[in-house]
Image: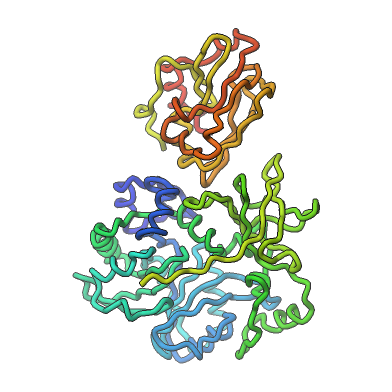
Length: 366
Length: 137
């Protein structure tokens, strides 16, 4: 198992350590429920060093990203981030990632942990005049998430964070560390927050200084268990599970978009675009939905029924701490993929009433 | 991994190998999940109770509890009939975490074959059993 620079600190903090896709990481510390609530109400710190890190350098990196991702990176401003999907020729999603623009010829991308090699090969295959530096094995990622994330981080960095909007790509100097560190205002919890891409040699020092700075705001270390419930509550997709997973099957960008409101004003060419246009034209495809149960905990693989007929499968499910409702992600035929549609989920021997709900958008708390 | 020596395993109760505890009150038993169960499961968020009147069999699943990450079956320690269930668990499943031998009890079962009670483990042997591989299924 690979160990991150924070492994010993996780153990000292009472982390329940597991083998997570080959990484020695904490599934929880004091408990998923209290950790989840702490991020919603205060602030939490996560070690997500299993995630990948690519540095793209050269005149060709902008056109590479335009080609391999569904979003346009030429129109992206310096110092900003954009989310996109990497598609196969047939429009199905290989992986999703955020890329940040440092300058015209320098970008930074964070691929999903299990997709690092696949994404690297795909990028290499389509790149011209762009050096792809896979620094995943020497870079830790520390996420600081929650309404008190800014107040916490502000104490240990040199720039005024209050003027940096969500999805900023920053280069910050941390107290006691000479080199600037790439820091994004982003996250996977639906809260305000930051993700710090820090080289291994400085990672533990950053981790400890953030933990100390967050003490007055009630910061807690958060394990991968609460990371999953936090993202699920906000309907954020998990690569290899909500698309490209055993229960989801391959899915296209159109299918993953909530309520079918996909702007088809793609102003650049990318791999898979033709198939998306054709799918849009033809219609009749499933749509991604968020569902809530009144009683019982939905889990991935469970069947979704409407009028007694199976209409889909749960791709992610759990009990959401705080609101104490079962929530599930999955895909339904377009006519059912509307908030308020009553459905049922087969939870083992019991049919549980549920309904499609609308997404709770992230609230900015500056 | 749970530190077995630090677990609370009261001496006045009996135990199953599937980590339920049993308190005998005449011809009725009170049963619930042990400290080992609740600490392995972590935060319990949902409890499915059997119906009162249900006929149950020893070592057979008759309900379940769910933590955020997992679901676990609950097994009846004896043959008998469910005579009462802990309705409080519907709204406050975390009682199992906070007080597994008290307010977090699961069900009361009228025992039909008292000889089965002799098969249950005492506190010491149960703790020893937890240290073996078999307990960590």
